[in-house]
Image 1 (tube, one colour):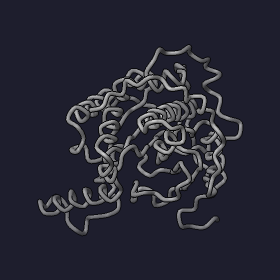
Image 2 (spheres, one colour; image 1 turned 90 degrees about the vertical axis):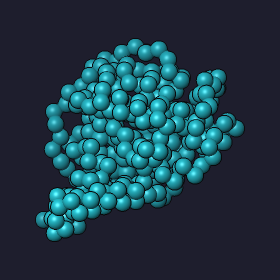
Image 3 (cartoon, rainbow, N blue to C red; image 1 turned 60 degrees about the vertical axis):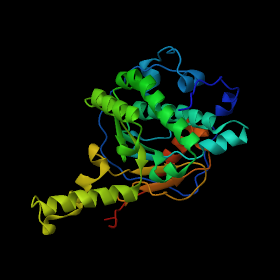
Amino acid sequence: MVSLQLPLPTVFSHFNPKPASCLCRVRNRSRAFPSSKYRIFASWTAADAVFGGQEGTTTTVEEERLLPSELRPELMPNHVAVIMDGNVRWARQRNLPSSFGHQAGVKALRDLVDLCCKWEIRVLTVFAFSTENWLRPKLEIDILMTLFEKVMKEDLKKLMRQDVRLSVIGDSKKLPKSLQKLKTEVEDITRNNLGLQLIIAVSYSGQYDIVQACKSIAEKTQDGVIQPNDITEAVIEQELKTNCTKFPHPDLLIRTSGEQRISNFLLWQLAYTELAFVKSLWPDFGKADFVDVLCSFQQRQRRYGGRDS
């Protein structure tokens, strides 16, 4: 495995977020929103967030409770999904090894988790590593597996402080044994947290998810647990990996780097999801980009195949 104890680069001057240019418009419908309950969280510097450092000073309750004026709390999505694309391109643009791009991507994810906690988004699902990514060079895979393990260990205390529940979905049998063990431990430790649910898709694909659900249902049918006529959409959904959350269907999917495809991610669950494709590479995706996408999302009237009355 490759060590990630790398020297701190002078690239974090590039972290100033630029508003994303949405390539499609995304809007939302009104829904009930719970009364706000805000907490005090620690703020980290960019270097602390990426490489693991000392906790910063706490911010005030008033600072944490502020939703940007452009956003309406009753129109915020319950579930946001993200295809975090562009880490390697970000590194190449700066003549850096790809590992620096992945570490910068971790910083962007930590920032997004902070925003979702503050703005009371219920679920954040991120596509971290697909089943197809196993075809990448072994060196890059080793770096990513090491990074996943390193981040889980470093962030556990912060997840508990923020009341975040962590779930990892995908074919975990392919992961290194140490990562499998750590994943189970962190999921167990955070299981009763009631704030944001952070779902990380690792060794995951939408096709894999549907196939494994079909196999499970077939076995239950063969064993007489259910009858073929009993198989409904709800039965299938209970066998999908997203059965770990009360909100399995993302309201909004964001893909960074300008690519306009869903790349085998949450194929069943995205049936009525609003899509947003932004030009920013993932490490450059920040608060301004997120606000821009959410503003567009809140303009949409979602009919789910019906008509306005």
